[in-house]
Length: 448
Image 1 (spheres, rainbow, N blue to C red):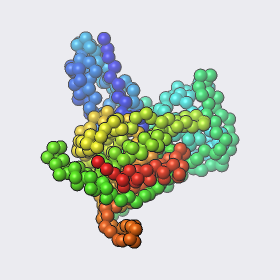
Image 2: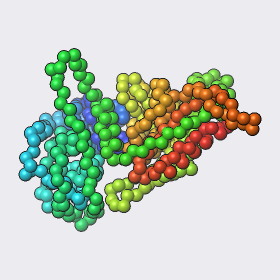
Image 3: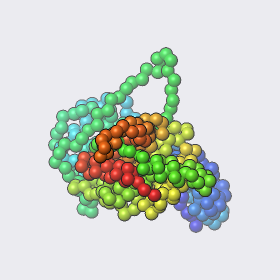
Image 4: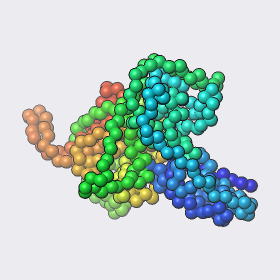
């Protein structure tokens, strides 16, 4: 029997992975759960194990290829015989178009958004495949199927990858808006229609003179490249709004010092402020479930889908550069000690890229502690498809006014600025502000 080895699903927002290294080649024997290849995404580098014991009969992609999640990447003969084996065919590269497109070849941007589905309607005469991510970007940017067909792809078999469509949007010249005919969907497909002019992202393109004296070039590795694409995509999808609040951590500081009398002896590490902030954030998410949701923008009107569990992501800076977001699963079911254990363990392994795929996917809300570098205030980019992210500034002792019946006094308190970036499509200023101040309330009135 021949078993397919597929590119594993690695998170809600991850649609593809890059093959870094084949540990097995056609004809090699492999045991169940033995590593067959290594892959990389914008979140993590990981190994892909064999689902069964047998012999690698066929490898369908080369090292360096970007592969769609769910695609078959190799075949395993479980009879234990090599049989006929084959290596992947050389990929036919489609070079990006560098010359300017003539005006008569440009498909004008339209006021009515064309129907974008996972495959092109048969009337276009094409069976070219497009990932849901590419289709979603095309829908939001008002790119018709005819226009999408003209975009050169650098993916496997000439497939249009996310970087291709974003590059196309960057380079596309602005043209007068004209109404064009909407592509009719197949009978089983849903239509998406908007009467407003779709947005267009006009990003500057910089030409670098590599002959300039004193230049040094750092080529993005795969994780940094994917992170860059993810951030650009998030800014294109979500209208970001930010709220900032000041918080007095006197009550938390008192509780932390009490716990740390014997906490390190029992657990092997000290209790920090972060578990308290995470615990209070979880309580606030229970009070405001809309913050713990995602937006389904595949049709009009949009839908908000609220999760029934809280998986808390914690952004971590890796030792070799870049960010990764390990996830505390079912965080709403853990107490302060359990949260602190997870933060310590996941943080250590995240910095040296030792996380599993399951540990970096499924997050419903993210906290970013940029204060660890001494920054007191910052704004973040939302980790799609989530709708908000909380930022934590550096905790510093500051003079504050203490109001009493005897008068006002200046006292020294441990203070922190909390910042919330949220998606204004779903969360308005009132909801975002109330959620942020609920976190502040829980922290300032914390008791063990």
